[in-house]
Amino acid sequence: MINLRATVENHQDPYRWALIRDLIPVAGRTRLRAELPPVQRLARSVRARGGDKTYGMYVLPLLDRGRPTPALDTVGPAWRDLVAAVENASYRAWVHSVVGADVGHSPLDIGVFVFGPGDWVSAHTDKPGKRATHVVYLNESWGRRDGGEFEVRTDGDPRTLPHAVIVPGGGRSALFARSDNSWHAVAPVSRDAPDCRYTIQVEMW
Image 1 (cartoon, rainbow, N blue to C red):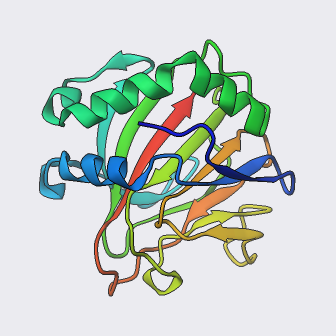
Image 2 (cartoon, rainbow, N blue to C red):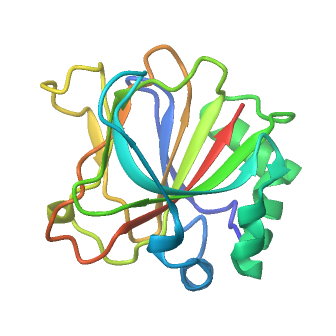
């Protein structure tokens, strides 16, 4: 399901992060998309103010601190293959080798996050207990004009231009080690985007 020999583009500035290409081959991405329930069946999650960040998205949690959720039974077998692959010691060792985060014994959260038109996540660093996050994009055709870019940021000021952006499609994924300066955000999805923005998020605690 995952290719740990995928192309990795490492970065040290402003924190340890990496752009990975085709970690999940196109056939696997196609299976995963096909085996998801309709977006309308996913839970809507919105926070317009307060907390460490604001956001709007649809969420389908599959693993909660290493424990399967009831939602895992609502998706197809490709998702169980994916969960098994990222819980494996080889994936954990790969994460360590790419961004330096020791996740060998980390409990994992795995979920599907779907962003519709206008959905976003404001700049934040993630909670202190987190070691690393890996976000895998399942859209094949997606351009800068469609919005929803993953933004690597130097601070939480929305007026500051992003240090780097990752277009969320075409087999890309973003992996980063959590730190006190691991600022990142999701730009609003365009009202004219051709589809919802589909992502897999692996959080390692």
